[in-house]
Image (cartoon, rainbow, N blue to C red; front, side):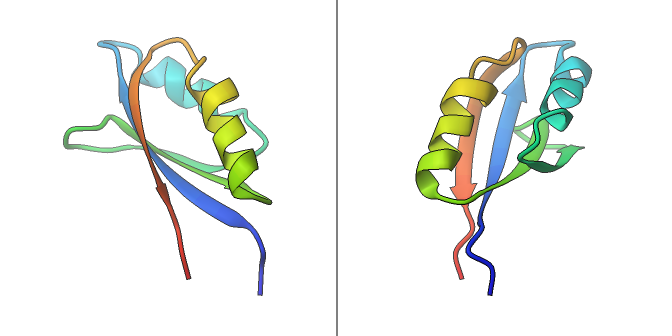
Length: 79
């Protein structure tokens, strides 16, 4: 059984920025997948890390600092 923490990040981007944000997020080593979606959010990014602290660090230091992102919501997978 894996000890990896998986988080689903629901991301709202600024108008016209979703392609650039998608490309930036796909370059992060912790990113498993990034998809464009319909609805209130523009992208869903799946990241994996070894701990909740690392997920928090990724969100604070890498996701929130990505140009073009206006809002996020993090959903942590549980077993």
